[in-house]
Structures are given as C-alpha cells and as structure tokens.
Length: 431
Ligand SMILES: NC(=O)c1ccc[n+]([C@@H]2O[C@H](COP(=O)([O-])OP(=O)(O)OC[C@H]3O[C@@H](n4cnc5c(N)ncnc54)[C@H](O)[C@@H]3O)[C@@H](O)[C@H]2O)c1
Image (cartoon, rainbow, N blue to C red; front, top):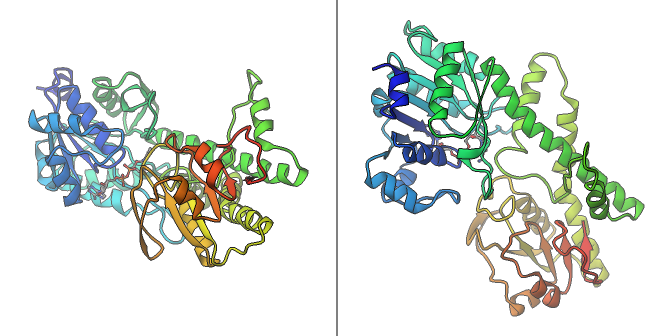
C-alpha cells in the first residue's frame, strides 16, 4: 500500500517526537482521527503519566489521553525504535535560545539523528518546531540523505509551523489553518495529505524556507506591535494620557488598526524567543533586523518599569521596597493557563527580591513554584491574606481573580493589565 493510500484509509502509523504543548495535542488529534500514533519523548516522567492516561497540558483532557491509550491508538514511549514502524514522523521538540541569545537547535539535531537512524523508505518527516529559515534544508535534509536515500522519491520531508495558542477556547489544533512547505512538490503534497485527515484547513507554500519564515513573521509581528504598545504606554505616562483609553478608542477604527496592549513584559516559549531566531539568521547574511532588536529591548525593560511603579506606590504610603511584603497576582505568562516559561512575573519577583522585598504570589493555575532559590506556594486570595501585603501587583489577568476583594483589602495596587478598568481609587497605580 502506498503512503497516500495508508493516509487516505487512516491505516498509516504516525509518530510524534516531543510530547509538550505542541506535540501532545497533535498526537491526540491524530489518534482521534483514527490513526495509531506513537508518542515519543525523552522525558520518562511525562511518558509514564501519559501511559496512565494523565495529561499535563491544559488544552488536552486526561479523558482523551486515557481513551486513546486504552484503545491502543496512542502509544507513549521513550523508545525511538518505534520509528521503524511509523509511516510519518512529526518533530515537535523545543527550540530555546542559549545564554548568548543564539538559537539552540540541539534538540532538533538530536531528534533528526534519531529519525535518520531509523529512516525507512516511503516515510514522511515533518519538522514543526519554530526555527530560522533554512533549518529543514540545512540541518535535517543532509542527515536523512546521508545513507543514500533521495528526498521526494525515497522519503518525504517538510516543514509545517505550529500555531497552537494555549488556553484559546476558539482556535485549537484542529481549526487553526496549517501552513505546509515541502522540500519538493511531492513532499508538500504528502504532508498536506497527512494534515488534511484531521485539520480543517491546510495551506501549501512553495518551500520549507517560506513555511519557516511564515511562523517567524507572525511572532515578530506580535513582538514588534507589543513593543509599540509598551513604548506608547511609557510615552503616554510622560504626557499624562491614559494609554488604555487611547488604544480602545483607536480600535474603533474598522480598518487599518489592530489593538495590541502594553503589559509587564513578554512571556511564553514563542514571542520573546522566536524573533531572535530570525535576527540571528539575518546577521549571518550581513543584515541587521532592527525592528526585532528594538522590540526586544523595549519589551525586555517592562519588568523594570513595573518595579518603578511599585516603588512609587509604596513611596506614596511612606514605605520602602526593602522589607515590604508584595503579592504578585498571576505568574503564568498569560491569562488562564499554567505555563510560566519566560513569564515577566518571574522577572518581577526577582527584581523586587533583589531590592529586599518579601514577595509572594497567587495563581490558581500554578499551585507551586520553585523559583529564585525558594520553593513557593500560591497564596489563596482571601481578605485576610490581602491585608498582609503592602502592595499587590496584577501581573497576569486570570479570570479567577476576584478584583473586588483585591480593591477592598489591598492597601496599594499596581495594575499592569488594566484589570481594574474604569475603577477609580487612590490605591491604584496603573502601568
Ligand atoms: N507552546 C506553544 O504555545 C507553541 C506554539 C507554537 C509553536 N511552538 C514551538 O513548538 C516547539 C515545541 O514547543 P513546546 O511548547 O511543545 O515545548 P515543550 O517543552 O512543551 O515540549 C517539548 C517536548 O519535547 C521533549 N523533547 C526534548 N528533546 C527531545 C528529543 N530529542 N526527543 C524527544 N523528545 C524530546 C521534551 O521532553 C518535551 O516534552 C518549539 O519549537 C516551540 O517554539 C510552541
């Protein structure tokens, strides 16, 4: 049976490498469509949880994992040898930055080496990790062709950026359009065929480089526009203008304007990191990506700006930061999810503790946090708890927060998210 036939009949065996925020929802979606899916991860703890039917990703229900495991459609494992049985392989491993803010592609390379070791004729390999244009061609292709197989004939290789938005109730893996670019036209066709089995919309593009660049443009667009919103907030502060009111009014324009909002800084695994994959690649070609660097600087300084606000709020009450008790509301990088990676709230905690503050946090999505040398527990937001603090900083706007209680009981509030929109009180210091 050809790969096309196996995919059409949902008889292909699929493999997903890297079962995190991206790989796990994809694997479960493939299993839901009727495929048998091998889920491979180097983290034995995660694999053990999945085998027991437990999900550790907010957007994936444990019941769905349990059902897929029980029915034998999802097989979590740490053993890469299952790749020999797979007709397709999706690589969803992390792409962080290293200490010098350069791309760390070691996870991609490690995964690609495993795929190369087990590559078989007719296999389709797709990279989904966000990375710089050229990665699929330069890092993966040579590894797969090293043993004499020809791409587009003996095996197929494509890049398809993942656009998942954790916590988004409307757009999830299945209904987010999927961009696909293969090394050859046949590679694109095969990859599109795979995704078309389970995703609503598939958008072929002419090459892997185009597909890689699409994702980086999307994330750079967000980073730059958030940078503009943050700079506008700093400017409006100088001019004595309410930036939130300005943005809301500008957003009434039915065309040509899209609202972005200021905040305590960028967080998550994508927006603060991905644009630097692009600027790194640009530098290699002698091109300086100035917007990216500038947005990175502005966004990166926002936690310090929030700390200044905390200093002002305490100052008004005749207090120093040193020795003050400060409660940070929300430590995940955005509302209503549990992911704390690169969260600006962590920068805030660190900066405030360096100034001698005694910082605690409250986050219904993050009951425990091991950070800045301390194992911490989320504070439950009661009237008594709120009164223990000299200042409360709203850093992430979770739906669970009862701001009426905060407003009633906290002595001072720094609101970085306009969570107290329309509320007037001398207690409130806005971003
Ligand atoms: N999280 C998001 O919202 C999001 C959105 C779009 C794109 N992305 C991109 O998708 C990629 C994956 O991100 P994520 O958030 O799912 O990361 P993650 O850290 O949640 O998951 C990655 C998983 O890969 C595993 N892993 C690492 N090396 C491995 C290897 N060699 N073999 C097998 N497994 C390995 C890790 O143990 C982990 O479970 C990144 O490139 C990221 O930029 C993430």
